[in-house]
Amino acid sequence: MQHSVTQDNYDGDATTRRRLLRLFFRNRGAVIGLLVLFCWIVIALFAPFFSPFNPIEIDFIGRVGPSWEHPFGTDRLGRDLLSRVFFGARISLLLGVISVAIGLVSGTLLGLVAGYYGGRVETVIMRFVDALLAFPGILLALIVIAVLGPGLGNVMIAVGISTIPEYARLARSKVLSVKELPYIEAVKGLGSAGGRIMFRHILPNISGPLIVLSTLQVGNAILVGSGLSFLGMGAQPPTPEWGLMTAEGRNFLNRAWWISTFPGLAILSAVMAMNLIGDGLREALDPRMKLDV
Image (cartoon, rainbow, N blue to C red):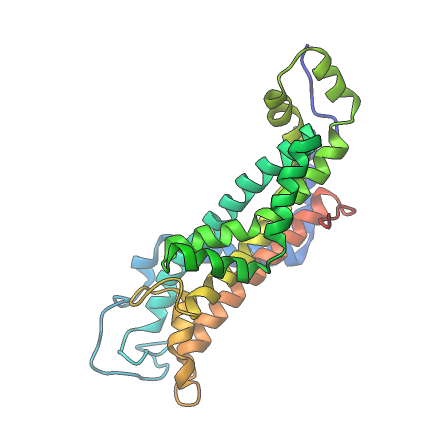
């Protein structure tokens, strides 16, 4: 017996995909966000070709303002800020993607198991999730960093762990509604294993809300990761990371505004782009879809 996904509009056929794309590109904000994100991805991939200077090379010219030679100016060590912002795109985007991947995989797995099996399994998993949820995201990330130590890799892990509760709760709530559908009961009647049912039949039907949440969380992960680097717990000098670059200029805002301003604008544009894309995806997949669980 061959089964096809039937819930709502997530059947995955060509007609549905074209409709979703049409709805997405009808949203001007989402298109703008996609263009901004595309620009940052291109800059990140080809940073060595776009950057006029070595991002970590110290120049004895010291701190100078924006000019034709240095459009974003230089920092206190004479390093070109435009080059550092371009190379920083690699680190910040990678931080956002890996952090979200950690939270998405871990949280979705916990939510799937809790929602499908219920009972004591659900109680244990959701109490663990509630314990994580009791801490604000940034505080939970700080606790993880305190245990693992500062560093870019540890920041990715910390930010990823801090997002697990949101994915777990969302996945569980969707599983609870999907597992009662007739076709799930039919698959169970055929003797399919629980793992096969969860990953082959339930997960595709709950992927829409998870994709939207993941898109929104990339921007949040970039923001939190930059905040941790700003506090000195993330990327370490001379790494060209946006949050660290912003922190390096905080003592010179009156005399050298450009040192913090341009990295800060880079963070703002990337986070806004991901939020706009997430809103566009939400409206395209289901205008009535709610992420609150």
